[in-house]
Amino acid sequence: MRRSAAITQGVRRTPNRAMLRAVGFGDDDFNKPIVGIANGYSTITPCNIGLNDLARRAEASLHEAGGMPQMFGTITVSDGISMGTDGMRYSLVSREVIADSIETACNGQCMDGLLAIGGCDKNMPGAMIAMARLNIPAVFVYGGTIKPGQYAGQDLTVVSAFEAVGRHAAGRITDAELLAVEKKACPGAGSCGGMFTANTMAAAFEAMGLSLPSSSTMAAEDFEKSDSAAASADVLIQAVAQQIKARDLMTRQAFENAIRVVMAVGGSTNAVLHLLAAAHAAAVPLTLEDFETLREDTPVLCDLKPSGRYVTVDLHRAGGIPQVMKMLLAEGLLHGDCPTVSGHTVAETLKDIPTKPDPRQDVIRPVTAPLYSTGHLAVLRGNLAEEGGVAKISGVKYPVITGPAKVYGSEEECLEAILNGAIQAGDVVVIRYEGPKGGPGMREMLAPTSAIIGAGLGDKVGLITDGRFSGGTFGMVVGHVAPEAAVGGAIALVEAGDTITIDAPRRLLQLNVSDGELAQRRARWSPPAPRFRRGVLGKYTRLVSSSSRGAVTDPDIT
Picture 1 (tube, one colour):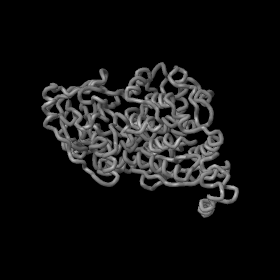
Picture 2 (cartoon, helix red, strand yellow):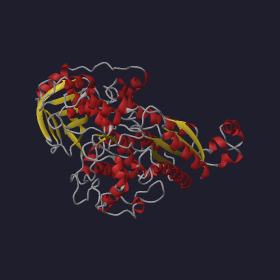
Picture 3 (cartoon, rainbow, N blue to C red):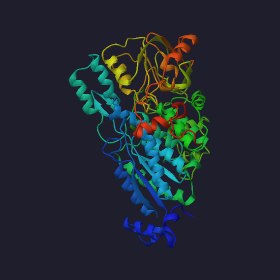
Picture 4 (cartoon, one colour):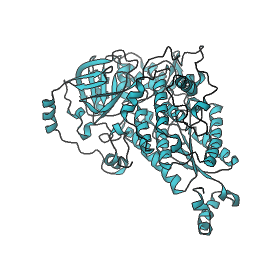
């Protein structure tokens, strides 16, 4: 029996049906599956401005396929707009709000299936977490990537604007050049154009079979994106009929496939945080060490921004995620027997994809000549990160640095120091009290890292934080340092002038201070008062777990 029968069938449900008739149900519709459309549309951000059109197209297709769609909204916080402000504290929190809202609507209304549409960083992991909790047939429709801006013969993304601020502060570009980058960086609708967090998580959805093939790299403004939304609706109705549920797809093997694909495309460090959280929701054992194990034999195949040359629409033209997956599958690095929402296995889905990329392009490298032979997302440990920290290590010119600590208690304090020239080559910058609890919300440090790049110090300075990094960040940076400062992690005990070693090859993050000295400092340390005691940030502060566990807000539920 369908879940929706609880509100549509029987004499006692006469009042329920009366309400449903008011929103468009007719006599025959009560026997159709009710499918929720979680619509992330908003005019807050270019990432989500095109979603309503996709939602309406999916709605029409669900009707035609014999379903009864019910649309509801989910929120968005734009990372790019809130970056560097107090508003960024709400970004990671919004992942939980999105997951909670989708779970609430679908379970509160006894929906039989879910079509979630999102375009910004937290829409995707929020939807993935909700799908795992609900365990009903579900499909994700990505809003699509933005096309690159153009200036002075270069492709631009929003990260170009952040880096331009640093170049301007260092006197490397003029006011007019800075304004030109600002005007050209974001030419229309769609999520940030490199392999940043939104595109990374879209790729993970596709790798796990929760989205349709090729859908994660389509441009938001292209007609094929709307067609893909319609096709997703058709596939979902079939999944409802066959009872292909979300957790049937969200297996341990599927998470391993997603991690491999994230590594191969050079994806965002945020994928580590979000996949840990989604695995927790699906009751699938997954730890930081699993990422490190899979990294060791997964090559980086795609030359994509932020550290590479190309943007996501270039990847799409070169074959997209199916091409990357087929290459990994041919090397025995994917689980080809994993099912997908279409009812086909991964191997069946990829059967017509060539095992080698088109030689006329160089966005996707051959397996025999990868960009890097091992994955770029490494887990570093040491006395500064006993639970671990996450770093992008591929493409770093100097993968080992030991230098004096410059210590800052917030992102704003650090950015001010960078723009005022207080950071010198050889320094190791420490930004603390920005973790899940301490921030709260684990803000992304795109403004400081971009300012460092813009000042010409990207290869000469290390940076560590208990906060996060944008998918647009690159360089010798280590985020997600856990335990965080707010709970007494060693990052809280660093003093200005201490030397810190970041050693990527050895995966080491070490504060070069004796155990005895650290014990004395810890005895003197006391936790700071929470920045927020009420409202959503107050609740989040009390509930959130360590970043090493995905910064989930239900850590005791398994």
